Length: 258
Image (tube, rainbow, N blue to C red; front, side):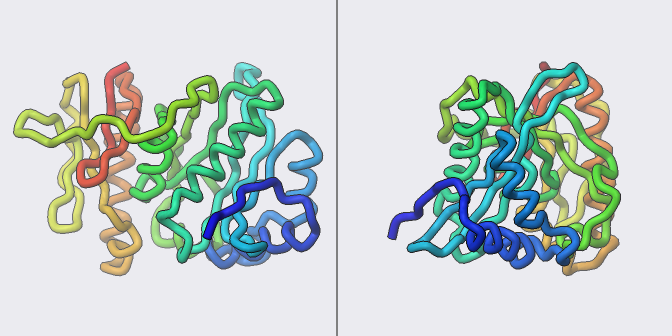
């Protein structure tokens, strides 16, 4: 059964986009982007795009035009949600690509968004499949959230930059760990190792749990330990000129010295 990717344009589909935010991300009603705002995104050069299975909305992505501090225009991808039963089918990539096409149609060359660096699946989508990068770590990026996904630790985020002039997407050569790999943070029995802030290698690896929600179930202290450890290494190495250029499953973030 094929999935149809298209812009949302009807009242019923905008309302379904409200519901999918609540069901997938766990937001309470006040934190859901309502249909009136979603419609205004579309009317003002933004994008609200859905993934449909026989008319049923199973995924949505939304965004709008913004300005960087230097007045560079860009498309801000605000939120994406895909029903759990439909994950692993490439829907996230298809939604982001359709969103990028909208941005390009308005002459934009950059798309940006944020995500939790502890979410390995999101990291793999953003850095590996889409080819985006990150060089900014946002401490306490948001004042608060009603989503249980954000409970128990500060809401830190990575700021993602996707160059829309580079259309190539796909698997890149795999990286393998060796005894010489410079690892700034390791997974040790579901816990973070002591951050190593002394590395100067051209490539530095930051490991994160494959499933942070499973770690959360082990206790808030474990979750907080991961937040503080990853915060320390990202902030340090970004300040030293490194860029998060890739995420490799079973390895982690690959930072390259720019």
